[in-house]
Structure formats: structure tokens, C-alpha cells
Amino acid sequence: MKSYPKDLPLDIAGAIEGLDKSSSQSLRWGYLDAYERTFQQFRNRSFNIIEIGVLSGNSLRLWERFFPKARVIGVDINESCRRFANNQTTIEIGSQADRDFTNSLGVSYTPLIVIDDGSHQAGDIISTFESLFVHVQPGGIYVVEDTAFHFHGARSAKWNRSNAMPIDNYFLMLAKSMMARRLLAEGSSDALVDLFGSIETVSFNSGAIVIHKRDVQESKMDAFEQGVRYLDKVAENDAEPHVRLARHAFHHRLDRDLVERQIGRALEIEPNCAAAYSLRGALLERDKHFAEAMSAADRAVELDGSNAEHWTLRGRLQLQMGNFSEAVKSLEHAQRLKRNSRYIAKLLNSARGKATRIPES
Image (cartoon, rainbow, N blue to C red; front, side, top):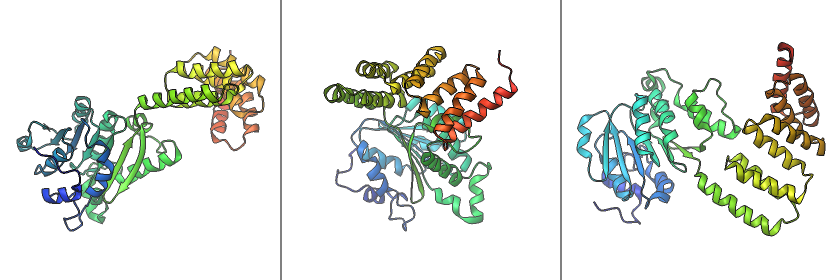
């Protein structure tokens, strides 16, 4: 099968294949201009692309020719779609309403791209996203097509027979959550809670939603090592940049030894670096070594008692260790230093409630 010439626009290819994804169908959808910009980076890579909804098979042919090295997986409930299978394309028969089935697709194929052009039912769209996105490769892309069906007034009800959260509410909530840097919807499903941190961006095209997954950890490791080499040359006598780099590794959950190595380097340069002790305490807290973490937090507070972060770490550890009245004292001190922090206020309210309700031994 011949691939498209590199200079053939994807929208023109779609028009040739007779796809309503192209702009030739009375400007009906017109996804392909945006897809070309989004997918171009993957064009010559070997990977798996899953498209839910096969219908006439034209879309599968488009992906075969645009991604000549890719494995294309077409998914449909109609057994007759098996006729579109070939050396490059696999057909899977099943319902996207079956979460076990969609999860099995992710396990079997670990896709880089998923395009949901299936039932268009709100419940199916949401459950498929929550079961499949977790399996998308880091740096991959998940697309939900034909969202306009959900905005046709009274007719939109037919696309939400399961009475799921409307998809505009669901994906706008995700977009707002990205801006807020936390999942905003109370009572979100466990699946959504688990995958939220892996979302890089949520964006909207005409009639489609595009969700990008965060990039590979290996690239973070490479970037970290570049940072180490740079600091070894330019920060021989300055501890703080090493702490900042360690905090970056901590935030991205890189190997703990990398974090500890930079903390140790900072303390070699400045033995009384409070920020280094505070970060070490947070690292030990993550490992659930609370007593050791407490020693590091105490040292940070001793060295720099004017920093709310150190007092917050101390109070958080005391809260986890069951020392509720001491946690209240530490967090009250942190709040005096940083009065507008809702995070500190939330911890303090929790500590006060537990100190009141639970007698300490």
C-alpha cells in the first residue's frame, strides 16, 4: 500500500478518501487540518493508533497511508467490519460501552493515538476515555470526535441515554482543572482521579476534543542529568540551584536517589541550607519514614524559622504521626507566616478537628 506524498495535505487526502473528517463535506467537520498539525510529529514512527468506529473503512485507509509505519486498530460492534483487516490494520469487534473490552484494547495495544468516533453516547465517551487514556503512551494523544451532536437542543438528549455527565461539563471540568492545577469535580470517578495527573493539555477544535498525555519520564531523566552537568560547572559555591533541581526531580517523581544526590550536594556546599533539609523531609515523608522526616523538618525550622513551608512540613508530619496538638501549633505558626494559603488553612482545620475529637496518647 502506497503512503501519501509528504507534501499532500491531510485534508486533501481525506477529501479523496471521501471522509466527513475533511472540510469538503459542506464544511461539516473539517478535522484534518488540525490533525495534520497535531499528528505530523508521529508520521514516520512505528506505533499503534486505535480508531473506535469503522463504518466504511475509509478512515482506516487514511491512517494507513498517512502513518505508513503504524499499526492501525479499527474497533466496531459490526462483525462485517472484519473485511477491512489487512497486513497493517487489525479489526477488533466489541462495544465501547463495555469497559472491560476497552481496557483490554489498551492493555493489548498500548496506543500512541486514540480517536473516538464511535457511538457518540456521553456515557460511552466518558467511560472509554477513563479506561483507555491510562494506556495511551506518554506523549500520546486522545481525540473525541463529533461533539457537536451534544449541542443540538432537544435532539442532544438522544446522545446521553445513560444520563452520564454531559460531555461539555466533563471535558470543560477537566480543562478548568488543568488551569486550577487540581481536579475540581467532587466525587470524580477513581479512574479519573488516577489519570488526571498524566494529562498535559485539554484543547478544543471545531467539533472535537484533544487531550495530550504528559511526556515520557526518560526525557525528564535526560533533562535532569543535563541540569546536573550544568550546575557542576557553574554552581560550585551556591547550594540553592542544587535544591531547586532536586525539587524539580522530586516533583516529577524521578528516582529518589537523584533527589537525594542533589540535596547532598547542596549540603556539601552549605551545611546549614534549610531548604535542603526541608526537601529531604518531604522526600522521607513520601517514603513514609516519618521519624526521620521529622528530624529533617525540625532542622529546617531551626535554621530558618521564618519560612512557612518548613513549618507546614513539620505540622503535616505531626498530623500524620498523630501529634495533633503539636500539629496545630506548627500549622498556626505557618499560617501567621502565610495568611492567604488555603492549603495551610485546610491542614490546620484538619489538625484542630482531630485534636478536639481524638485524645492523644
